[in-house]
Image (cartoon, rainbow, N blue to C red):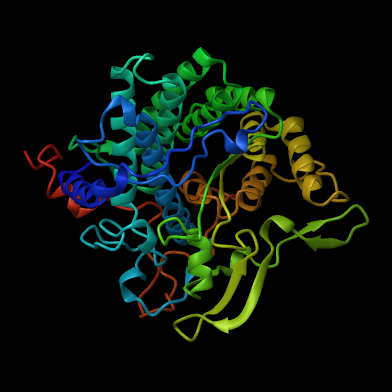
Length: 442
């Protein structure tokens, strides 16, 4: 966390210190056959930086890591949607044009210092990472006698930390943590892998298949991101062995702005539209006809956005402000296996995924490039779940793979100019200018 971010976090924490002790803590009950609830707790909130760091508040500390993670995740999905062409801007807010335009300047504060309900990402993700790592360190320094359920809390904190590092590594071209040096995306993915490995160790200690599956799933994504195909394949298979119906959710809550499902909030405010590349997608059926692909069904609301120009199409995936995000799922694990193994394994997985949503979908016969088909299947299956932006980084511009609809140099419809070439966000000036350990600041 940068010095600037740390000061911001402390200020927000102090405002909550007066009432944080009154928050009712809900005990975490982990059912091995209910992965959806393995990490879900009631009303997580931010924590004071000092007074609450006691063993008696261990549950509250972990609840806070969840709250920070879920807040950041929603902004991560929307901002990644802009960069990857899933979403287009429909506002008159010039300050945010550069993100969907893929031409963000490091001096901009919109993405660096903004809070998650305003689609800021660097500060919210850095805060989430800091609270998770700090809580993990505290838990490891306390004993099981001091903290009932200590290993469960360690596993949860480590899982959140792992996903926080994934967000930093996928969305940003580089980042820094704890006022440290600049780190590449691959270095951040290695840190994510380490946190998930710690979570697995704790989950193994208590024999929790639920937590093990979530940790394996996170590590599979981290390993795939950093190019460890064999490791990702093994972890994805481990998830499906533990639960073939695996899903891990990030909760949302309509009661507060920072907990609201961020895609729904942007759609409901006519501030974003699903981009044209993700409208009208269909699946072929056994009889040779086509039907809308249920995974990417979108609706024309019949009204323009705030700019009075952009026709707003919304995804049916997030129908309410309290609809949770799917962070990881059995479908993602299948797609990791399909990408790594290819061939008949990939063909069978593609058929399974399609027929899970359209029972009479035509089986995939392996025609064309299997890898290209897997990539296209990821676009649909993981639509607006926070995965497509890094897929664009991995595959953008390669022959017959991901080709952005709006290419660098194409006219940008808001405020003139042209689309840029960014597929990740630059490390912001708030980091480079305030971090004494950043390259060139010594």
